[in-house]
Amino acid sequence: QVQLVESGGGLVQPGGSLRLSCAASGSIFRINAMGWYRQAPGKERELVAAITRGGSTNYADSVLGRFTISRDIAKNAVYLQMNSLKPEDTAVYYCNAETFGRSNYWGQGTQVTVSS
Image 1 (cartoon, rainbow, N blue to C red):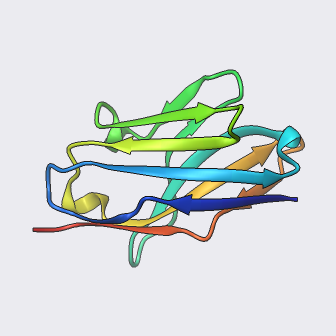
Image 2: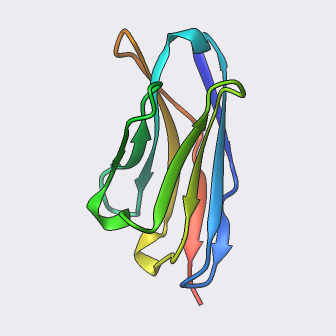
């Protein structure tokens, strides 16, 4: 089992920045990739960004150039730096961990609201 705890969400004005953090615990040696997904009201959950243990990254087109995912293997943590935030970035953001055995674990989610 892997447990994930997110932090760092909140309310920010358009154009502002936020940094999300996710701490993993439990069977962390099983984790390959970690990432961030988001779900806006009435929409399906979507991938925002992901990073593998080797450091390869993948981003949704809508956040390219604005968001940066990073990972600290030693701290069992993954981060999402979000810059130039837009109202359409408003959603609940979920941390995800995928193991080498393709099992997926999720955090409880953190709300990000971009509004003036």
